[in-house]
Length: 194
Image (cartoon, rainbow, N blue to C red; front, side, top):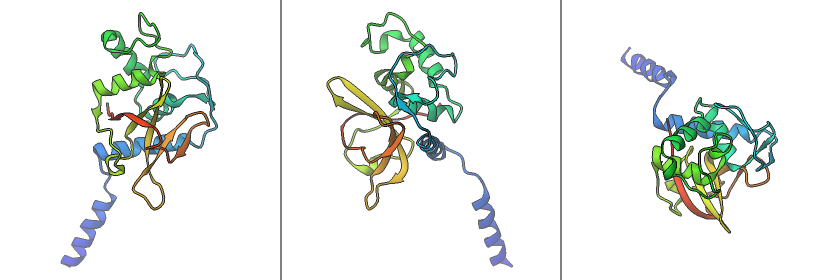
């Protein structure tokens, strides 16, 4: 009987949903992974979009849109979060584009702004060259050279035969899953949960 009760207790534990930080980030990575099933053309054009929860036209996007859309699937609107933070703390954000005020249509779609937001409200992680320092749901930013920055999300899928996790990003070929974590110089590594 005792053996049966132990087995029953373990079975019930296995059925219980688990909650917490790790589950959120895994769910976030999974939501980003679903984006790779959509056909998206790389399009950095400026669009007038709704606010809050605005998005560029379906089938269009850039690297930041992968992050924005993944969070939206979990009910977090980074357009709104970034815009409100920029309204309250405009001086702390980069002025790379000659801005004199926040712009709800584009600010959340710029890598330096997302880096500032995640550094202010998320967890800043080490920019290491060790695969084990990166987990599913982590956000990574790179310097591509020539003043061009890039952002992607760490997936829960490993490169076969390694400890390295694949990245979900859009660097011009649409929203894809790719082995590129250490391809470029890492300039930011964050975890963010509202």
